[in-house]
Length: 302
Length: 335
Image 1 (cartoon, each protein chain N blue to C red):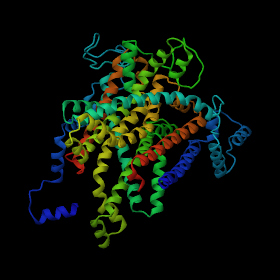
Image 2: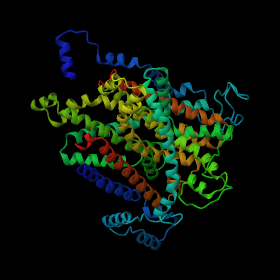
Image 3: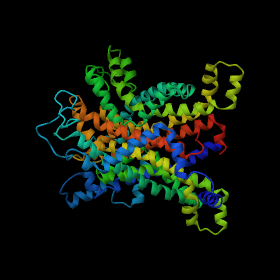
Image 4: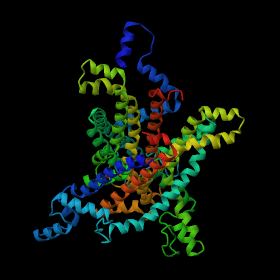
């Protein structure tokens, strides 16, 4: 499809907008999605420039200011706008540095899960029936376990670190990519352009990666956005259960776990990390909805 | 129909075998020597090591070990807990009613609110009500439920003092387990206030656990309704002069229910995964808390057995959903 349209464009000078522009036209119609995008960009900036933005180091303990409330409450100061935690660490700085961990988790999980999943899905879609069945049955087995439970047990086996949590979540999310890729591959393979490429002598690898894959990308991109938010949520849940990042890492879920005992005494140590998770995940999900509407022609204008 | 049923079963069996292999393999891929890890003893003598190895059956070849494990599983033998020395099977079924009760209340909560919300949103598509409902649903869908639980505890247990923070029943009540469901047992016991206490304990965990299914059901109901409402037969029904209530409630809802039922069935996995977090926070004595505690205690037979049982339950429910789906929708059977 891509080749065909660019050829037409080169022979007949039309005013057809570029793909990116067309995508943006559809995307920006969804106000929620644009808002999600802005929040996500802010989140990425916080993650990238945490060291410059955060007022303090996330692990510095101010022993004179333990469990200090946020600035608008009695006893709060501008020194610690969102208050301090039980060890006197600045909440704002920890939250800003936490963005870094969540962003990192999201990127790594999506890249690992998508790469593995797309590859397996392509293989399953092109392979002989027995290999296809084998791969899909394996994915069914992984999907039989509730994802968080399987991730939890995997981390228990591998050892509780953030890296292992990311590996576990990536493994658990992978089957969705495999199914999605395989389904679109099977759909595309029956089309004329794929048959034409085979007649023209394209080998299986060329067919897989250059002919078919680019046309299967739309649903995969949407899935990537959605699993970015799932990854952040699951990593935070694992951290909360003590099976992800370990204290004193300023990871949002781990911060919540630390704050649990102060739940009735200091609302701010509990509220802000969760709010950070919610806002980030919500922004990404809004963006994902917008992406789906803009990329999936079947759902366009529905 | 029978052919469809058989084809569903044909995929069930290998998946079940695979799930068994995973839960069997789990102990054997632990870092370090499984015997030392399982025994948890320091400075073990060679003799003791060999006794333990024989006791756990690690001295035999792997296929033999798996065969023993597999035949054991089929007969309901999942080994014994290291901590309590009770059979894992018995422990699972003594705790399962607590999780089932919580999960049922959660899904009832989710359906009772999600279904009407989705229908209303679809009928008033694009209006303020629709947008407000769907934004709320997206927030619910993005909710880290462990944080949601803490917030509800702060507001309802801390500030308002309406609900207790943990457990299933107030300490001043005691009665026998008849069904394992606190709501029923407390009524049967005839003690005044016991039922109220059971409800108070159940309400926050149910809301927390039901939040994500609620959001998913509301979204799914809305999109299914929208799809059905644009069909020709709905236009015909309207043209015949049927009342909007009859068209939306009877003609449209029936067909819109098919995908919604699937979503409800598939949320069992979400519920069981959510139960891990919900039960841990509310100290709810069910399967989820049992699994987390066992992971921290390194009680591996429990982790192994629980993992297997939960996977099998999810698989069975999915199978039932598939079969029901085939019953409702003849088109699926023909594939």
